[in-house]
Length: 449
Image (cartoon, rainbow, N blue to C red; front, side, top):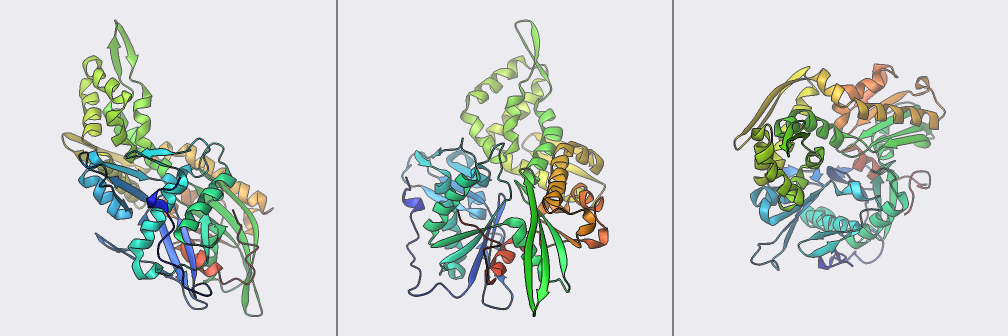
């Protein structure tokens, strides 16, 4: 049921053959990056003239704003413009981020936004059309064939891969793409990394996004001046940076907002329900609690809580919509702990002030369950390729969470540190996908929905 937000773009594809360049799109849980490549030479990233300055990593989020007195005056924004709209008027703005996480979930059929129904493909196509508009001349022409990155494993307990790709297909066709090819995200990163290889090599690529951690092993060989690549193995797991963020909040913030404390009712002392703190896994969802049944229950707890000051902080956080400030505080801590053995967590908003020193060792203990899942996926990729760590010549780690020392340590325990490289955390996948399009035979690298 597409409405006018998700109709195919009105800008036509030029007559004749596809545009004379290749387009690689890395639609990520946190950021979306797009790269263009001609028949030769380097690829270049699509830039966006955002409010805070030109950028290429475009936040994967949407905002829908409509004044209560004029609901027909709906305004839709994406990326940094969506964040700006949400921060300015959270009460009248529906903000949606990390929606890639729902791609393979059969349980997600639609969501209501300002009185309209949006399926996953409607959200994605609305986002893509906004991205195209913000990009201006760089995306004025869309080639008939586009290579889109996809995770090795979609997020969710039992993700439906076929459903996810069919939803992608619908959305990208609405953007104006005639033929959509899909490649595993770490394979795109591998093509980016292969440019620097000066000899034959077996390469393991680890891509750490917001929602998934994916691994591919590829053999690169030179023949007659050309680099040929052969896929050997892959694996993935649906945990990454977003899960790390939640562990920080769960251990530092939620206890100060009442988690783990008690309330009194009918002469009994009972624990505050943990369900009230589940929404902190996604900061944008906090605003939705203000009109929920849970919020009414939380307000009632103010009179019954053993530590009412903590519940008061929870009420203020939700009423005043401090989710974005909290997210920024968590991001700063995680970034600091990537380079220092300890850092100060600081969350100040309204009357709330939570300041705690955090040792990297403590943070690593909090994320131990996720680290174990990532470690198992690395071993699964090696097993799929029928290789031991000694059979891997080079390791390339990319994505924001690859900077977390405990994540890097997984690879240092298995591989010679001299073989491990990191870098291009945000651009490698999209650039590799665009360069991949130059391959004479894409059948080894891409798939259709």
